[in-house]
Length: 125
Picture 1 (cartoon, rainbow, N blue to C red):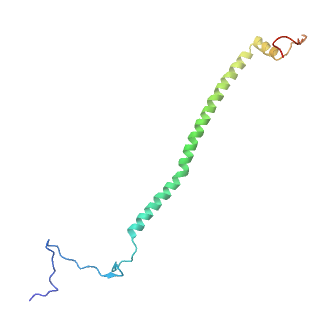
Picture 2 (picture 1 turned 135 degrees about the vertical axis):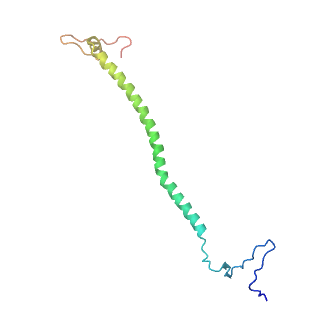
Picture 3 (picture 1 turned 90 degrees about the horizontal axis):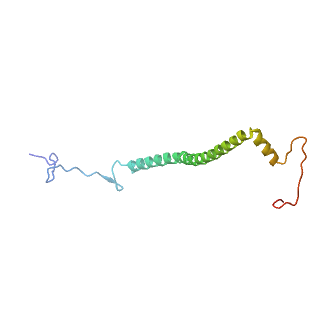
C-alpha cells in the first residue's frame, strides 16, 4: 500500500512541485517587508554622491589655480620685458655722454653755466 503523503507530485517536465509559501498580509511568511536590496542600492548611491560632492571643491580649486597661473605667467612676461628695458637703460646711462644728454633734457646745467629760457619760439608752449 502506498500513501499519498509519501509521493511527490511532479510536473510534466519531471521537476518536483514545491509547496507555495504561506502569505501573511500579502507577504511571504517570514518576510519582514524591508527590501534590503533596494536599501543597499540607495546606500551605495548615497555614498557615491557623497564622494562626488567631496571632489567638487578640489576640482574647482584646480581650475581656479590654472586660470591664476595663466594670469601670473602673462604678468611675469610683462615684468621681464620691463626689466630688460630698464637694464638696457641703466647700461646706456653708464656712458657719460648719454648721462649728460639725459640731464640736459631735464633742464639741468653744469656748475658755472647759465640757463636761459627763450619764450615765444614756434612749437614751444
